[in-house]
Amino acid sequence: MTRPKDLDPSSNPRALLGAELRHAREKSGFSQEELGCRIFVSGSFIGQLEAGTRRMQPDHARMLDEVLGAEGFFTRNCGAAAKSRYPERFAEAAEAEAEATAIRQYLPMLVPGLLQTPAYARAVNRAYDPTAAEETINEWVDGRVARTRLLNHPTKPLLWVVLDEAALRRVTGGRAVMAEALRHIAGLARRGRIIAQVLPFSAGAHAAVSGSLKLMDFEEAPPMAYLEGVRTGQLEDDPATVAWMKFTFDLLVASALSPENSLALIEALAQDYTHEEHP
Image (cartoon, rainbow, N blue to C red):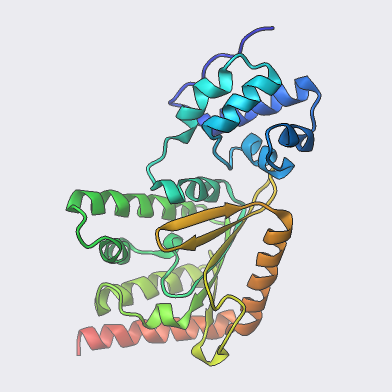
């Protein structure tokens, strides 16, 4: 058997590693479910590894080498596929986000990262760690801004956000920063690049009152949910859990203002912030 060549770090290592995994699995005659059982993960997880939407961890790589007779290929190369500019707790989610065909998100207190302006992102990151060095803050902001370039494509991915009214009224970075942030969101909505709805205070208790959620769909991999807390984050691929998160998002959409009324509120608040900054 010809031994596969190690991956070129200048390429997309996760995609190449996933392609090698699919080739080795099919050559060994395993389905995704069968291989998942051998290394104690779900078939969905194997599908996400093959599609490059999940990282291959060292313990999985060692088991895959053993089960597939890969002569250490996956162990040698999983390190290159794990390199990221993002914090460990969020790296997998950010990498999956870049491969998604559709993203649906709700955050209770902040503007979602994909919609943040550099000034807003700086204020959020500075609040997150008030003692961080300025160069560290700059790196975090650069990473956040890099993520927003996903929206440079005219249609992909579909981005549907439910913005809590609390996030729009929480003055983050000052009124000028808020005015710019809300005008940015309104501009994306007016161009039809995103679907934005506001969950108003008048909605009262709602399906996601205890937290945030992000749902991601992929062309060649099962959907995933990302659940985030204070300095923590977790990708979830269990089909039942993801289905429940989708139902939760549907309930949020039903409780939110229409896209038209949401846009009117966002623009009105942006104007209010502008006038308050320059009376």
